[in-house]
Length: 265
Image (cartoon, rainbow, N blue to C red):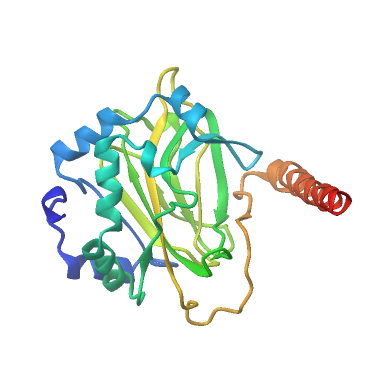
């Protein structure tokens, strides 16, 4: 495994993570060996192919993003990357660095895998779902590895991290080639992706994987929740119009589906 990764000073890495502001997080450049990173970059599927075989998001809070979570559809270099990030040695290192005991990878890649977002796409600031009922697992850690070359700030698509009140941005990271970012999954780890405005033929590319534990985080209040979105400080209309309408629509759809289920049964 380690022959695919550039050397990491684990103690220095842990110190950086544990001393990050607001919540444990990091940004690590040149994560993979150059040859391996190039092979992954070259193997990324075409966006339109990804639309056909993956899941596309079209909601107000998350749109023009496509994800492929089925590892059987991964090209060999990306399959190798997935195996690396799920390996016992790598997970053990993450467990030590983040001080999370018994951390586990997710073989089903719920919400993870290959991510591609086209121009016009966005992912509003949010905290992620904190529990998977099917597996009875607590979500604890997000890792995001980027594969974009010659990315410009005007393209948007930056990972931004926020304080618990979404008032102050604490991190702003370009999704550049071979950059690994990670942070704990908690009720205060607000993060998002700034609106994307890249040229035709350019899409934002990343690989995401998330880690879990059977045991609840220390201090957990017992409340399970899905993804919770919040507007950025300069997004008044989104916070007071678009997001409430989206939330109301989802609630209405849930009620209709429940009624349909009762009628059928």
